[in-house]
Image 1 (cartoon, rainbow over the protein chains, first blue to last red):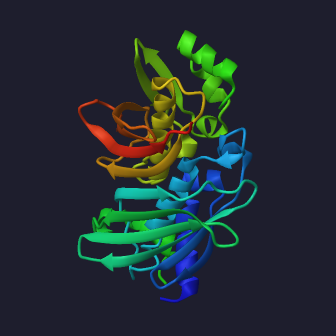
Image 2: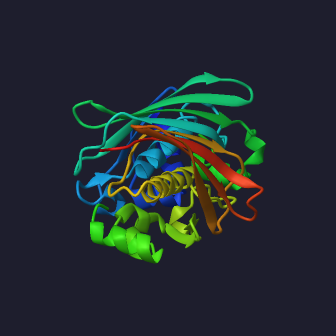
Length: 156
Length: 144
């Protein structure tokens, strides 16, 4: 699978997630088992009005989405994999008025479970948060064919 | 969040609307809170913009996380009479069932409060409290 195919699949997948659209999440880069996404700054997701720092929940959503979508970059066929658990460690508050990026990788794929790692950071490279996640493989047949075709764009 | 007047009003009246209105992210996901005696029940009303999986459809897992995270922070602030939002250190979340496109509830419990760090347990459910959709625990740094 080429990076173009991965990019298109992740973009189409993101497009179907209402909350990802609300947050304005975009795909920055894809690779074999790696994915980077971007969360733009917005006044609507501020958690602390005094400082303008965005709420951890928006970072959690960014990391959950990136960790869930990196699976698309790792598997040949599209499978919808529900999240089993997420563990997020917050290193420092995100600097206001700047986007937050998240880079995720799948570091172990088994028949039933996919293990992911994800780092959120800002321009300059300082880590905002780290996240590990596990996702359940329910099989590609568990996802309706119409939706699979929507993500893969028919057949790629 | 630190407006003492709003916090006083919230503590005295049990009306969380002004407090939640003052936090953009709470408005963004639609978080609400009701007080029953000393107990707080957090609510996340059904909202199309909060959905992730379009097939079920289900609430985005990140939104469920954000909802529980913010519930825990408000709960902690209220339980320790603090004027500041506590800072989250880490958050560990188990998804037990799909969060369907309906109203979701959460309640929190202070597992342990030390001098500098507090551990909070959060449970979220929809149809029945005995069938949680997610459980989480979080550590918060208590600012002095």
